[in-house]
Image 1 (cartoon, helix red, strand yellow):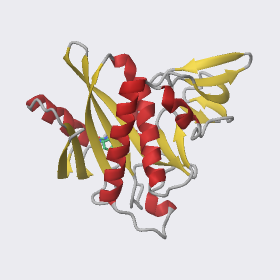
Image 2: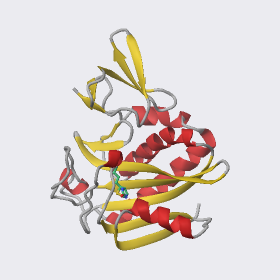
Image 3: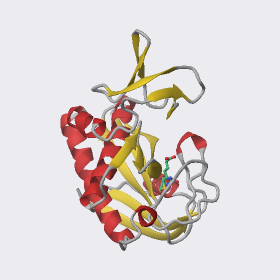
Image 4: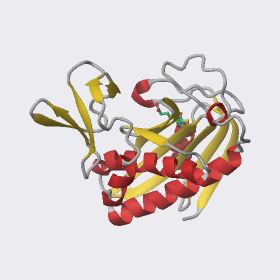
Length: 244
Ligand code: BTN
């Protein structure tokens, strides 16, 4: 699939930029926006995403799907697998996934993904923005409210090139999305599961509403927790989980 690459020095949010550009022009190519810094980078659950200049990868892809909004939970996990596999292709070992799609390395968050729904282009055609933030050289985590790391922090002996990483991530995401569109979530379940950082751990929901042991995902990408006699099924977007 042909990509329209938009490289910016500075932007509020690459996700917001994709939304604006698609509103203005009908485009048969897949717009991909990369910025050197973001002044209002967005994270999941309304949180900000620290986006210092020149250090990390801030990238968004404008994806268009034939189908309904219901496919989005699966898509969000598929993107996590795609980013994890791209990193592994660059020689990064032991990449973990924290449900639904945070990318972890050595117990710290390395990359986050924000899937936003732009709307319905026409009946049955949905526009989605997939935003990926990947910490490459960041050393100052002021404002980050969780345990985090960067590629340079985890692998100080290596040189990291943001352009190379961007190319690898774009390729991996587009391949994964093609597979998801053609064959559904099925082929991603095991690939997600093998990287699950919650598997076998004692978990609690962030509001304390439930607790149990992590079992992995079902074939639609819901997270399963063994609690007493029951298996509880959690949908992406409903509840966030952490290790107890
Ligand atoms: C998360 O909370 O884990 C998701 C973080 C997503 C950050 C990326 S950076 C590029 C894109 N533009 C944004 O404003 N957010 C995403």
